[in-house]
Length: 251
Image (tube, rainbow, N blue to C red; front, top):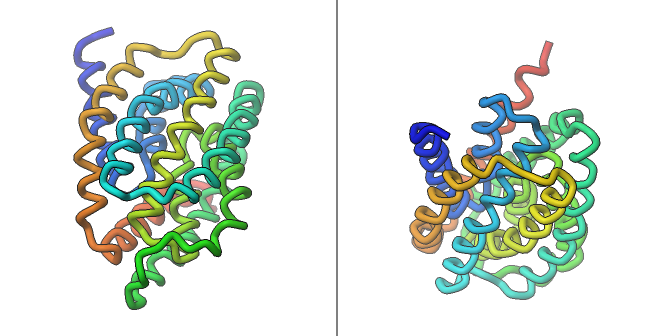
């Protein structure tokens, strides 16, 4: 592996984790886009990204936990179902291309992005994770874990955007989703390694190095940014990423 490719992967990982740690999404999407552009197959690309994410999500999640950005009840309610969905998604992607369902995910996320932007216009709520979200957490975790494995990224956009769309406090949603993602990513990586036997370790190391460096900085940014600003940034990011996914499919 050339040094230039390693540095490129590290810079992509750094930028992706800065976005993901501060806004609760997009590490997988950004990193997976980079790997796919190199001609790597969707299954191996997703596997490589998830192995790197084991280390970046652990660093990010612990940083959020230390800063008080994690609601522990919400964490458990998301992580356990997410693990189940992640295992199923990894099995599916290893045998079936995941590209077919990506347009449907993109349409759903565009709708969620619009809902988030609309909520950002309303007066600020008290900062709590809302117990009323409990019934939503299990199906959301399963769906997010499945789509994340199949699409090479998507846990944050699906889970974070839905929680914010339902009124969860931004920093608690982002912090809880980040830490839950570690457990989901860990089992996804183990499943991919068992099925595929290997990943692109050179690129994994670059993505991992950049992500670990950026994770603590991103957690501090999440803590200090105003909730309304976070929601505006998340909503805009969701729309940009997914409108770009939909536009090539239009006649």
